[in-house]
Image 1: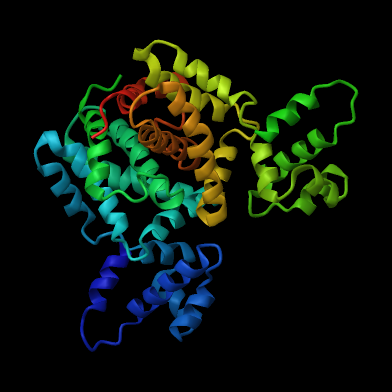
Image 2 (image 1 turned 60 degrees about the horizontal axis):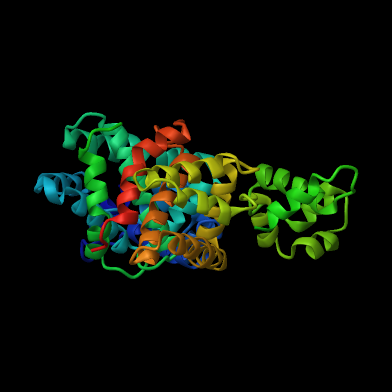
Length: 201
Length: 201
């Protein structure tokens, strides 16, 4: 995703990096004021630049939010590693990786809650996320798995992962709110492995 | 929940039922304008009554929304029937009942999306829903199941059900968006049954 390219370039020392300054300001605003309460103008003010510059670098507020969420740069590589290990541990790796990615996202749980808020309040946002999950992430996982009914399986596993996200980051339901990624993987990994590998009815 | 008591009294013929008129207006407003775009004042205007009367009958906007969502009156009875059948079909009954309840809610999928929007944008709303799931619904299911680690199991199964709701009603991910409740139960019932009955790690 966009955000990671930016974070990378942000590491170049001594370079005045407008993109990374905008992202820092955007993360602060989204964390403080949520998706609805954040405007491009507010982000621009916080970064001390003109709003037009934010638009030029990131487009709409939605584009800016997705960049600020900052899922890992190399999401395809992450998927490849998840799928590459032994089959018995596949479900646990999927669950653990999902939780670690969100735990380590720049806004932590607020990233996931923000995506849910966006998707549940705005049909265009929901459609954008659904297409991302299905066409990008889902298709990559389906290719990597090489099983029958891969797209269906990905949707079923996707529903379990979305539910973990809602329980952990939105509702903060125990034990999922406080458990380590490894513990959640032990709880739900076997169910996810079966969804990925058992025959689809 | 509140909503159902109201729907029941709404059936009495010939009675001028302010509560049911308020709920009808509230459902129309929440469906059209979403949770954020709906105000008590707007609902009152639509019902042709004073806003104070809406407050007197339903309290806050959140209370009104939960009443308008209108989960079944006899949720405890529904749970008892789900748990009472044969153990082999338990998971399928849980999944199917969850989907049927939301498919048949007065606002259909909009009810679930509204709850997600509420929970993801408002910590108080998230806390209210978490307490409802854990203390009311979760505790009832835990008692009915009579297994070890019942509260943990309920949270794990809850995460799967929340995820089905997000996939079906918010993101409209196929095949979960268009599948029948029975088909979704066949897909995910076995995983849910194991979460409810296998040893918790």
